[in-house]
Image 1: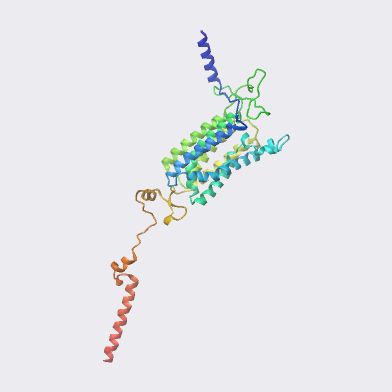
Image 2: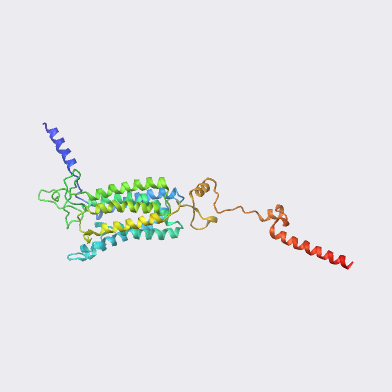
Length: 365
């Protein structure tokens, strides 16, 4: 076998035998650190916003209204995600040898999706209340963009060499570096000058969840397109689909986590959230909501059906605008008094009184 063939075979075997991990997750531009984890989160937020904006505009919301909502939802979501992570994994911060101040170091990783959704929803509700938009319409519109954003965010875990599973000999096994605790975002360097790898290959659970999130986005998009879910049901479908996969993937992970009855806490959370979303999905009924600007230049929006929205966009006709006859026209061309019920009664009473007076005069005469 010639040298070129040997090199090709060696390269092919390496490519097929493992997935490499980055040895650097932080770059510096002067004194400013640029963190891969933060970049992935930002790109994920942008992707989710763009997709959600497209879906919201198709249902009548103004262009980029999602940005006004994101001003509230994103910081609320980040804070909620961090709070959930710290509460469910307190040992790293408040246990033996822990550093409580690091609970604030969001850039080092550690955002719990459940806390992010809970507080993010609160922020979105506050924004919707100010804007006069129905929260259900916004939630359903975000049901496709959110899992796409989550998928992109999972790449941050890859850069950080975290969230992997147990050892594996599969062709897609993940190489994991031993990170340097004294040089944040960089792998330890061995005597040979090369980054130090943990022994063996590991399950790339971050990649499993990335792929699952993308599948969830496609599934919710197609199902919503077919059945036109309304009143928050598309969002509930996203929650059900995500938790179904997350619960399974969580059992593969080997990073430290609290357990309840021998099962990781996030598995229990997935089960509970799935059941809650299922109950909501089954009990909640109603068509998709669309919105049009409030009447007479008022603040906010009016919720309408799809047919009413189509009529409004086609002709400007509002569903709550009955014909209002002009007052002057009524006086000039309106029906005779006797033709209206109230006026007819008054005319009858007048005629009766006139007849009675004539009868009395006749008797007197």
